[in-house]
Amino acid sequence: MDFLHAQIVAIQNRLSFVQDDPTIDWRSCVLKLSWGICLFEIFLLMRQYPLYSKTAPPAILAEHFTPEVFEKSQKYGKHKAKFSIFSGLYTQFIDTLQLASGMYHPWAWMTSGRLIGLAGFGPEYQISQSVVFVLLLTFFSTLPTLPVGLYQTFVLEEQHVLGAPLLSAFLYVFEWAGDRFVPWLMMLLLVFQLSMVILYPTIIQPLFNKLSPLPEGELRTRVEALASKLKFPLKHLYEIDGSKRSSHSNAYFFGLPWSKHIVIFDTLVKQSKPEEVEAVLAHELGHWYYLTHETSSRDPTAPLYHPRPLPGVPQRAPFLRSFGFPESVASRPPPIIAFSFIRYAIFCSLEYKLILGMAFQMLLTPLESVIGMALHAISRRFEYQADRFACDLPAILHVESAAEKEAMKDMGTRLGRALVRLHVDNLSTVWVDWLYSAYHHSHPTLTERLKALGEYGSEGLGKTDVKQE
Image (cartoon, rainbow, N blue to C red; front, side, top):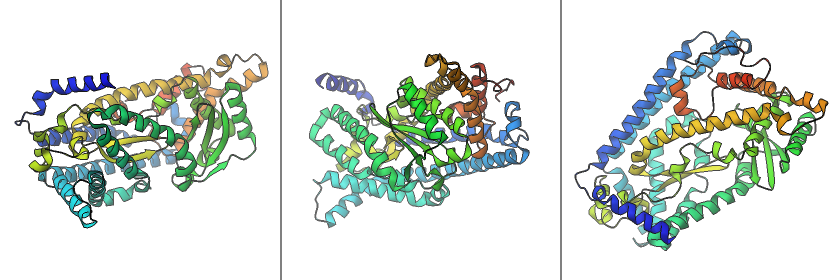
């Protein structure tokens, strides 16, 4: 820990010329960067939008889409694109007003102090004030965007599960550890993430969805046999009522290294044949086999959300004064403001991300975008790897029985059929701009995956040349 602390101090000292420069208008920098990202994302949407006017799917998918379904898919994509442009600009204007006024965040901090004062707590109760500060920011940031948020399906209640307790724990460790807080916070969040591996599927997720044992039948027999051949430590096999919230389909696994649980959405069971669901799970188990599941399933900007030193910049008075904080706060900032660290916690599947609050998060946004595209490229590589795993199962398992080889040889073809079926039923976009996809998508497009499956030897897939526009 001493070595890590020494490195952090060295970085801060090297950046001290930036930290103390009162001529830098941090608020203006944040506004320009945030608008730059907003306009770039709209530019990507404008590149994608003309593709929704195409009247026929790519040749490789032509036989899988009826004209009516394709037209419906295109209208759905066009509607989402229009809404994304509107909601992006609307949210950006709200954020700009809050930042440009120079009053919003300072007002929230001072108000939080007055509120805890009504309960008999003084300014020395910084953790309590910080929790109230975050709740105020969340509440008053949500109000203007509530009409936009209501358009989306069931997001708000899942965004704030356990956010305040984690925030309190972070601030307690921060104050207790002092300037050596980084390794202790890393340890806290490591313990938290390991705990969530157990708690989320067993306690939190059942609050929103029902997990039931997958009924006996062909699908269960196929999945258990596949897990056995791969020596996958399967303990439970569940079906989840995903249709309760969405028509989208999925399958995933979770658990400790020696005890895994597989969850299949009921929509996937209804939409696909047992042999196709087996192929989808062969892909998912390919991630486990190559030990890439944890990397490929993580949010592409997750590395930026892990606790680590934010070298000095937010600790300095000029930075905080530029956002309207009074000298009394800027000169001796509390942890929640000094590091602009935790705004709220979002938990999704087994993953979480800590949203960096206020201004410093916006300063990092351009860097996040670049790193996100790079990590998308890595994630796509893992997806291709898992697809190939499904195609090469007989060779990987060293299957010698002719009957078993025959049963597995079309695994890639079945996977391709399942992917097509899911895209058709979910009205997913089939024409995708390459730059839009590189920025937004962690998975290859359907046409790219089908072409790859064809190259891996799957019959009837990827034989048609598809030009990705």
